[in-house]
Length: 354
Ligand code: 5AD
Ligand code: FES
Image 1 (tube, rainbow, N blue to C red):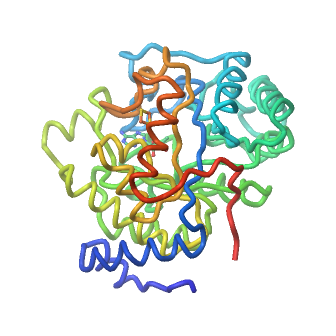
Image 2: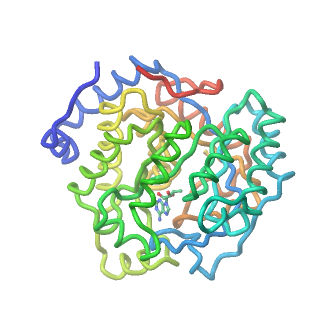
């Protein structure tokens, strides 16, 4: 059933050679594997502190125009309780690389940060044994990933951002490297996590050849989950400032289209993957998440963070869902999933394999 795409096929599809056939094929494949199911993941953005300075990201440490927050364990458990009541069986704990939760600098030893994060994971696992815990907290040592797995985490989202070293370096400061990112992803996989990779479409400087590099990398990694969304500028970031100054890159419409095409190509290449229709898609176009589902996405991640802190987790300008309560996001998304012709499923939703 898996269709092999050559590099030339991929390029032509991304250029829009046959959109209608592409989306129809992606939808056919997703229905063959997952039917009309769309899985729900409750997103808890539990800290916006970050030690990194990625040039595109609104919560980068260099952004002084942001007030920082960190949710304590009880608040996080409260979000999970609310989510459980709304039908969620997966909780995604996402945050910046907060020094308070950091692992030991050279791996090995258990750090205070490890203990704190493991304690949160273990407490969620104990209270909600029928739920999956997904972490999205950046680069750590293999030992630290192992401890978090033992505490109960089973899935990990870490977008690789750009498989090409050349592009990666234009998006990140010198302390960060694609080599370490890849090391993390392979370690996570080896430990036994379901692993998510991904990237931003239309990032400044990104070409279709870079996207081919991303696809090659993912062919090798074989991620269980793939998160992609359009790059959106944030005014308080180096790339947000420079892209405003020189109006560089794709416009909104082109970015939306390219994201949808890439979603469809990913569905065809990875029939079994869990692929979210992301908040960034919903931000670039009011109908973006519905279009994402029709292009092959099969996951939605409504926000479960406390309403008071949502605005402070602004990765990019005009992020949606910052004014809503958790229950509103849940019913809003249910409505959108139905209107696109699919059905929300509230079970744990593990990845299916061939
Ligand atoms: N535009 C779109 N996506 C962004 N992310 C971070 N900053 C931006 C931005 N300006 C994405 C990154 C990260 C994920 C959590 O959010 O890909 O991995
Ligand atoms: Fe949050 Fe629509 S998903 S308001």
